[in-house]
Length: 330
Image 1 (cartoon, helix red, strand yellow):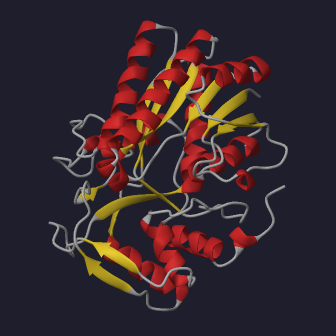
Image 2 (cartoon, rainbow, N blue to C red):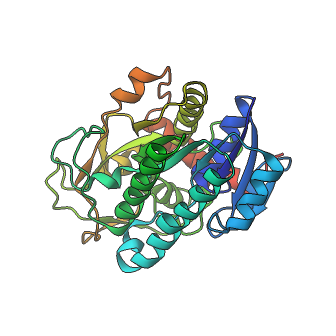
């Protein structure tokens, strides 16, 4: 099987992708600057380079030494409220760094790039569920920073013999069902992660940001996908691109929305205890609802999501209750 370079591979989604590609028989090499990633998330035998994807000399050296046939690009900043108050960080870490990475990869003969994009490129959708042809109108710098990368990769693919996979994630949750890894990101802001931390006694409580949205219970509605399902989707997409040389664009979600309060109730059910939470004002940059139409992905590939919301909560809670204090994975 081929060697795959995974940027941001010590992060939450990236580390699950590392295991998914290893499980599928691929060789893997990782680059991560460890600003949010955790080295212990990776098996000890996976070649690891600490540094930035914007470091052209480092990326060129990795390609020369490891000869990857393709790249999964996860590295970047992902906190929407932070992007509103510090937009320069997001355009630097997401857009500018991705341009440097893609330019070096192209110059060194790498012809397959799968990019970790986001449903934030849709902004506040005109229709729910959202298809890949929906208008692209981000409402925060995070979404714009990712959309600019989509554009530059699409343009590079048109100008050169490059196949690009753009995967627009909806909300990612859960942990490896085998207990090998989970979400170890410091100060994580993902709803299910935070709620499970409260249930496990790692936080005193949590806030519900906004209760006056035009949704059934007034709180934001999101489409959640288990991180293991998402990692497997990357394997399916990458192998399809590698065999066909096609460029693809897919939503990655389940096609079902859950409100913040519904998620809290699911965590209460799994934990057997009420969750301390307070109702708070809206956060900047949050759309009322984001639900995927994943039919393009489902029709193009044999991939199917295997885990529902209860499984996402169950695996995330198991991780918070002690799996993340175990020894680093071997």
